[in-house]
Image: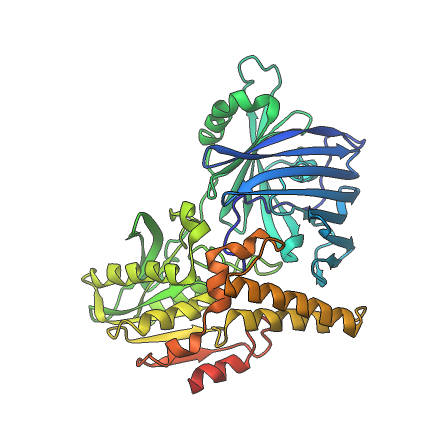
Length: 495
């Protein structure tokens, strides 16, 4: 449920790749970490023979110092284990055996991954080295990979492309190569490496985060310029399909000090002004199509399917990139953003549609998925002009209760754990939830629990809000959903 990452380094994975030499390589050094142009910490790392790596990081996040150590193991450039220690006695371990992934320590979880996946963990930069080692430089071009992110126990999709060599920097004789990694079609990380594959500079523009090798710190502006001047990858095509019964217009919506970029579909046939729908994506910053970053679903976009289907039936649809991702601005606000704050962005979208002459200002409905299913009733309860709302997998209970159920579901599927250990884990999690909701001492818990979004989610009860909604409501829920359980649809109906 984490809304954002101050430094977004999720990526990598693999297919068959030709390493840059036949023997395992070694590297060590220090990366200086920047956020919005200001240095916020360092990462000191050592890589031994492509078989293991260690790093020690010291960062400042939300004004608080954070330090942690990481140790990884590899076999043939495929990850086998990860251990992260982020405080005295606080750590977690992840073991990978083929497609099986098991986490122990702070949490007890299991998952499936791709046997060829590379492992990248949040807030750790140096594993991009292993991504570059997996890239087939003889083949070149855009190459697909899988990336296991242990902290969220998910395997995502990524593409990596060499953008070609860069000229040597003044006073530096080494030549460099620029690579561009694209995660889930929207998150872009530019990577500059030398001819030996050593990381020199990394840039993730959306979160305004960077890492530069210490000995190249004085040349950071030149490295930034090299990235800025490189040819851009083709963006996502949001235009209307050939012969579609609707047009697709690229629009921007002003919301406070940031802008939301989106696509407005307008039917070609029918009587104007048209009824309209605004789509609201689920938790986590999503681009307008709400892509599904899981194997086999890379080309599927939930909100695009909904939008184009409705537009084909005479209903205009506006869908936008969430604040801070895709082509929308406002990434600098995500550290303090909340669900109710994101509702303000949707209100700005409603105002935008009501200003359009081809839209019927009194026939606008909201379609919200997951967190969007929380936001839609928030707005409808205060805006009687809305025609109706659709809630897809929206919650009917407080977030702390949902979080407990999600953990309970995971523990029930851990055959190797005793009943006593499961109960201990539940009690520890419940204590953390109480501390967050009540504003107690959370110093021994991960820093993410201090985010305003997390506290609001754990504390918010959707039922009093939906009781105030007077417009028609359509509630849709997946019977097999383990994140938002099916009986919550009935709870919303009753409320």
